[in-house]
Length: 335
Image (cartoon, rainbow, N blue to C red; front, side, top):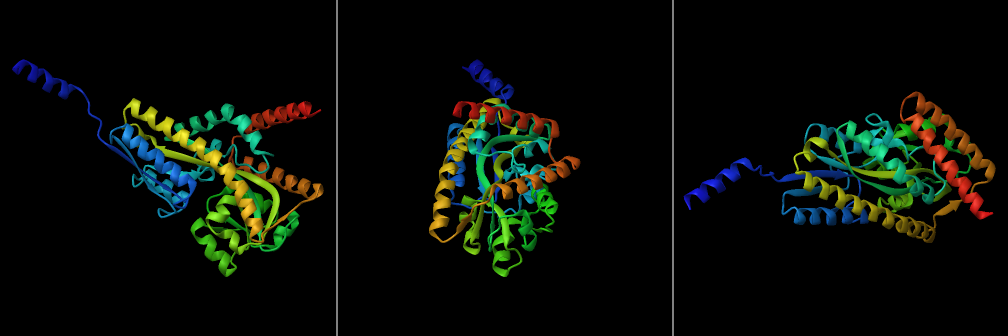
């Protein structure tokens, strides 16, 4: 019996025991939204399946500050993760911007057709910078919303346009159109709409409702500008404290959650459009000439952004080539 006890003690001494890991994760996403419900459900399941070895604690609604603030807190260890827009990483991993450049996609179907091939580039680029990507989610197309109808890019010059702090893509795009945008954190947008500091912004429809911005703006320019991608990342230093099995479980469960969030968001975007129309928001159609002018502006912005190394030009060209192939295939099938 003494021999068995001694062997058991020796086994405990040489077998590493994983300390419980708590990932504190912040986001601008408001509490109560489908995104937060999915992330919380996934977190609860992870805690149960790891028997408490891994816990996820969420801080929604911007209580930890802007995306850039969240990244700063991750660097000093106050937070371990964030559910952020890809724009937050423009000066960290330019590849994260791959899907979020102006007028890249014409439909959600195009984006989904390339994700299996191009998502890994984003995962790898983030890993090189010390971040583990737990999920990419489709946030919907961003549309220009304003307090008066906007059809041409020239008309934007007469508006007070908001761009998120640190969002080089949006800022450069508007600057190419002769606009001097107002740079503010997301938390200041609603108040700034109330006071008139800003009167125009680009946002996906679901977020415009969740944040109540649509109540201060009456028009939507019905031409999608960019596709918004959300990304859940955690600091690799914290993630590596888990066992390999727990890491695999967390990745699998969170990516499943983010896949579901993409499906939910697709439906939510359709419903958000209907809700806005029912509340008197007018969707303004553009002529083909106006659309062409917007695309010219986007090309100028892409050139300026390339000069700043905001996105990987060679990889983006590869993405554009793949999209042209997809469009040609679709056109051939329609004949």
